[in-house]
Length: 81
Image 1: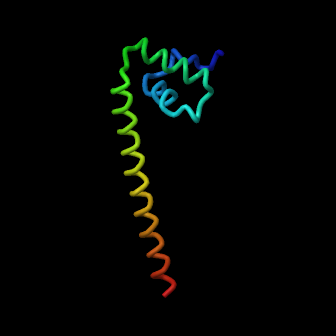
Image 2: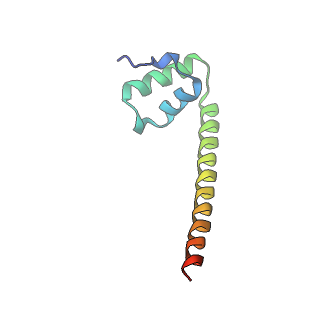
Image 3: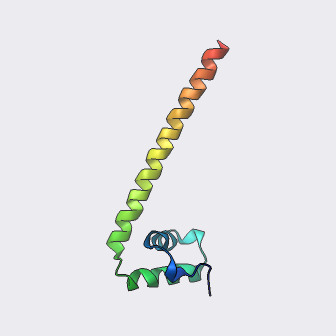
């Protein structure tokens, strides 16, 4: 199956995203991404490290968002009292 842009032309980060989040992608895209990562010499260990980094960043951003919301909520409650 052909994709636009072609899987092989995508960045290594994009390929790791496709390969490590298969629930978001067509199975053919996942297989092509996995093959391309192997062709590029990207190890499973490197991929795990990158995915862990992405998860930590997402958690940090979520905590910041929740903290901002709590401050906003407090400000609204302050105005109501």
